[in-house]
Image (cartoon, rainbow, N blue to C red; front, side, top):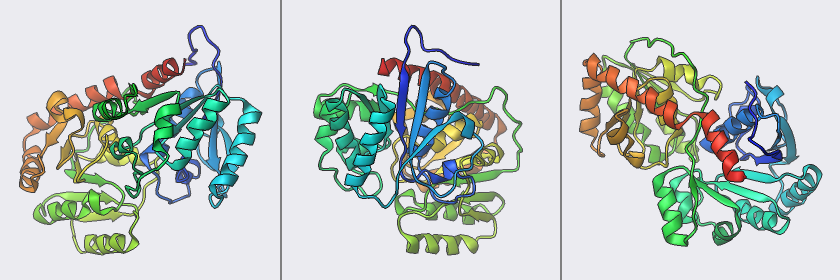
Length: 369
């Protein structure tokens, strides 16, 4: 179905992708990618359905482009990843002058985000900034928690600030007095769901960073030897830590360690999973929660309960930071089908209502207007 924007021609929109997006545009790449890249991809793909909009996607100059949705994208390989910030902006300005976008969208806090906000204000382009993680509303980079000194410029000059949960929304307003809009992460949601293979397959998906606490998932596997565990764990910031986790995982007989899965293949792991486990110390709003919910996979979360979704929507179980509760609830869910089926049904209903990319992009266009 082709969508139209009501009563307005939006013309050109430019999406600025994070530098770690290669695996989305080359299905043979095994480079780690983040949730910000996934969301920009989903937005760009959905925008391609609007005949009144021409959507450009600015990406680094990757060596190969090979992905199934290529016909839905207008890619601009705008800069080399090794370019310094000055060269990037000179090339960026040239691109902007050429395509003349009415709006530029970017997700994930960097120094470039702040400079973009000022530049777009000066040349009368609507700069829409989308926060990717809770720490960013404090002016910190998600990758290493260092402070972005120019953050006040972003707050002052961005046309619109988009947050992805109530905490981010309140923090930006209370701390900086800047109103913003909540827009949840969106995904394509299939009309029909596949039947679950009740094989008691327990899934964990995250980068191998210490605050994700992968060792606790491995501990869970050691305790529950009658269950089968899958751990999708791409390398994070610390290669030594990654090698340590990878080796320890190899010693656990009922655990399969998977170093990388492409975005285009990840859904099958959620569909095949019986339960999804999150052991992170903290998160923003994990996109893996949404992917699990779309696949009718109940969630067990050790520490993370964004917007009290487990209490409000009953899509899984929040374990209040207690590993013993996590282990107990896992054993309960694999033996009590009534409780499991209720959580699975609620999870899909929640995803359909709150995280449908078609609805969210429609809201995004209203925000731009």
